[in-house]
Length: 96
Length: 186
Image 1: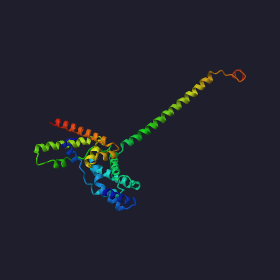
Image 2: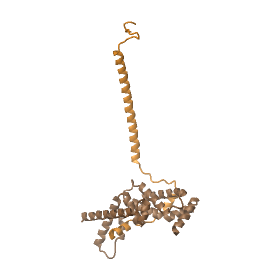
Image 3: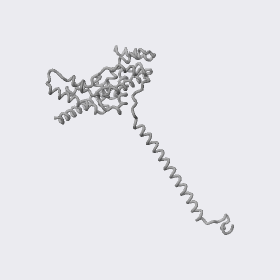
């Protein structure tokens, strides 16, 4: 049980009131928009998501490029190191 | 119950698309809806937004409202949800200091007591505005609408015993905060 003073104050401070007369017209004219409030969090989340997608794309492209160049360089080294032999076992460079 | 029967007739009228029924239902419940919205938000403009949103939801929902459901509980749930939807934007309960000052004077207390009580009431407003949204809503349903614990429980979806213990905790919290404020202010 709350103390009587607090109970009384809560009742007084939170007592019911009458609705303003313009409320019906606000509801009746449904075209009247609710007050526009900024949704900063929404704008920020969209911006962050876009940035993330851009960065992810950039990282992926860089990764793909470096893999491709590393792969082709590796192939060239392997080709140079591999003994140049013909299908018959002879050196194609010497026995062309 | 006569009122509920009348509500039922109006709801049926709304379901048939009768404009007068909508208006009558609005007139019947506008003060209740607006009071909850205002006491919860503390801002008349926000309260009008909440009330508008509540009635629009109500009129849309009435099309599928089942006659066996209890209208008043449903109405309260719609208001409560509309209020809680606004909770990010609402931070302050209505500052009623001038009204409180006008109400507090009583013939049996002296001027010093009046000032002290007015100060405490002002602190109470601040403390109420700092309460978590669910606790503030509980106080609004209890003190603005004078609802019983089981009715509040039905609206908020918790047992009436839980409502009683939560209210008890809120009262103690308010008393502690008020005592602290009083001590700080000498």
